[in-house]
Length: 439
Image (cartoon, rainbow, N blue to C red; front, side, top):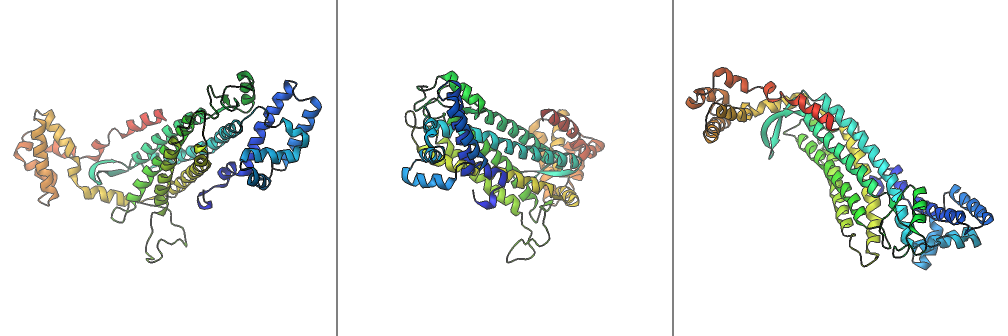
């Protein structure tokens, strides 16, 4: 991922240096098991441990040294073991004992994803806290709801944030579950039959690495796990876009209900000095497109030839770092948008008032049904008054009061009381109570 959309804690986990350190950790656990079983003498293991500890203290094997070996071998794991052999000398004979390359690569990827997942969950939790504060702050602010981009019925402005809070609560659970589904390694050899390690030994080693044993592997861990992980990343991207799209609409000049933070010295347009564009929300919309595309690419990796081919490798070298780095960035940027969001409450109310009383039309239709009118007739009578009002032929409430069939079923007091924000939003408090339980 380009530096512009990268944050250091996440990018460090995907650096070549950290990857090779993780590979070294896996290799050392194998040596530890060999020593425990008497396959490495105590003297040799003590010296091997001392040398590996020194390598780790200096930051691992230099990626540049590994790159030099890979230029010759054209195989990254062999390049790694060769560079490690340069440091270990004759003790390197114990490295990569009984393993195939994917044993190290796949197991290490699962370890790194656990750490990556922790960072993502931390950002989700921060976002949830911001959304809850906004939901509470604007719970009692009425606003016009919109469907198809048109005025619908009044709603609570806080419900926008509360709905997003519920969605991100679900996303948090999705992430937690899928991270657990990625908590699997494999050391079962070239075709997964444990020809060099028995499954119990494999389980012991993986347990020390914080992983479970893949029940049935081939040369690789089955890629449905990885696709599941990437699909959740894609869903999170779409959830970010859902928020961004709403914020973009609410910032339009003719709506003007919210505005992103705009710091001193910031410029909106190179040609039009008056512009304050919703660039952060638009940025997140673009990021979401990439996150969904990464999910699609990983779905293609589930089907591999026989026990394994290498077609998935090039995809995963790109999509795992890029997708998680980009989601980390998007979560953080959305948090900053919401933290700095300005809600123009007077404009919110102005737009609500501009919608007029026709937005209560559903209440009148149902009240007529309660009074014994067929739904079809009730709809027709209310629509007749509503469209006349929208065409500038009179106030909706007055038109209802003068309509011979409506006024014959509803009293003037009932007609007045149904056009009430208090009545419309009377159940919002209960919605909040239930949403809090959900979270």
